[in-house]
Amino acid sequence: MRTNIPRLPPLTDDQLDAEQEAIIAPFREIGADFGVSRALVRHPVALKAFRTWATYVMIERNPLPEREREILALRTAWLVKSGYVWSRHIPYGQKAGLSAEEMEALKRPPSERAWSAADAALIATADALISDFFVPDDVWDSLSTHFNDRQCMDAIFVVGHFAMLAMFLNTAGVPIDGDVALDPDLDLRPRTPADAA
Image (cartoon, rainbow, N blue to C red; front, side, top):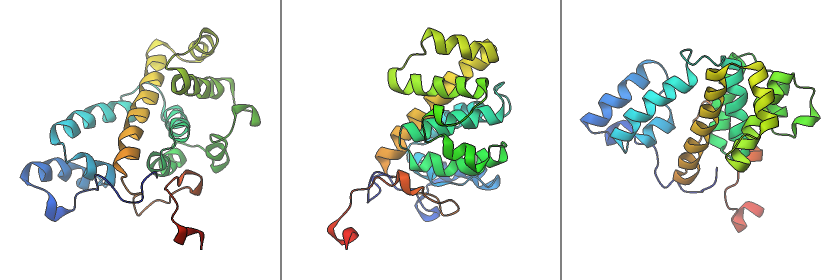
């Protein structure tokens, strides 16, 4: 979290117009009526396009396995300091088979854990893309040793998706959903004198 007061807060049911309600209804039906969609629905055309892309990036039609996608999502969330994405993806990471220790290790330099070669390649890919918007030859060679061309492309797409989403969530100040907890390491809101007391 970066702001104390949301700039584009999630819309409540009574604030939705008919078009927005039609877009939110499918999220509600599948139990994914989260703050991110409630904030993005302020721009219905953008949310419709976003939903198509996000569904590809994070659902089974993506040939990159779920666990590997979550490594990329969580590493990216940590690197771009998105408390919302991090908190939202902890349950997804658990469902994908990541241990609490592995997810915590995604906050630290990769050398501090004995990652598999494939996991290390994913982490190095996220690190390179966030720091330089480019995957250097040595990282690409490692990534492409473990993943096919489409999976390598999807690794880039997952990192890019969550970097873009974090830009929106961090700037809009979308609050953390009530069913997940904000990681204190990602609470970057400005402190007031009252907070210090």
